Length: 233
Image 1: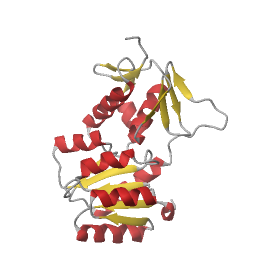
Image 2: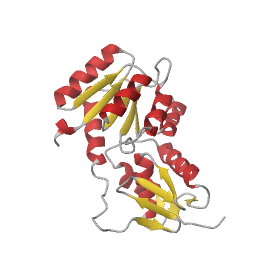
Image 3: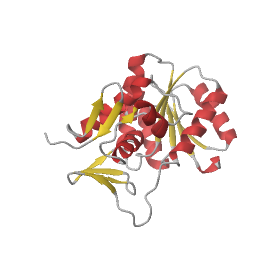
Image 4: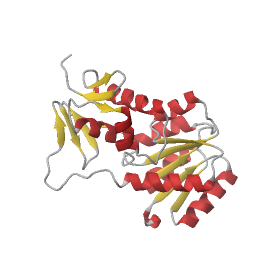
């Protein structure tokens, strides 16, 4: 894996943490950029278009949750991986992080070797998202069209922007309308065995997709998993 082509943005109000992370990521070969607050992070992200962002939660003025939400609104940030790296380990903080649009959540302290491997795995999996073959039709079902080239979901003619994990999850369900995908199958195909996420992470992402699509698309099969099956209201 050639790491020199990847841009990583570090966002933390503690200079010593930025220095340690920058040193280790730079030594791995990544292009590293830093920001000490949310507003600066938005400016750097818009300019540099990072592939991955490590983001603290507890920052003055604009905290990490708000910053994450604003980052997701920036053009071109749909595929950017956002990872919270924070001392806040409570369940509600992690759920709030995923609600804000994060792809992963790491609790400090974390061993540097583990952090570096997590970054590598996340970036590798980012490139493994299936691409649409030239000339191939967009994947669709009923009133939903999934456009991989533009990373858009189109519902009844309306263009909807989805964060990367929500997009991949919907793409999986859309690959076989009516099929019930078990929770284990979804975790394996969307997150992969190498990336550990909490069991409630899936529920949060499903809820966010439902909020965007509206009712009548994603259905829960109790005790098994989820399926996409368009039903009239």
